[in-house]
Length: 148
Image (cartoon, rainbow, N blue to C red; front, top):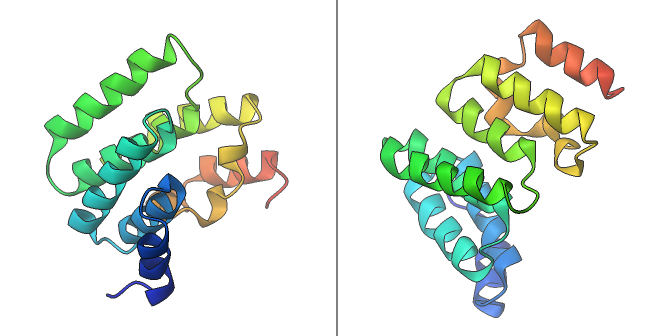
């Protein structure tokens, strides 16, 4: 699976802009190009260490690639950060989804909904949640968001 030349070109044009690295890393993660995703998201986190969603997706990529220790370490950093600054519950939902922990994932998605978290907006197209789409709680969540 090859990503668009446009994404690679954007990274070439703006090598120090965290957002192009994040877009590339997210696409790689969604295509199960986990090692590439990890490298790209590591660069994103290096360029923008406070962007917690990149850290969560990086942790999810580590977990899915068979490195749960590194994933746990990253999520512990996010948990500690959340005691000092806002960290979206959606970040924790992404990670729980990667671990296959439906109950925890739905708990965090409900918290994100209660916070009116803008990260929740694309929930219906986020591939991390694909395995849970048949769960009645998923349909209920979409209904609460007026997406069902």
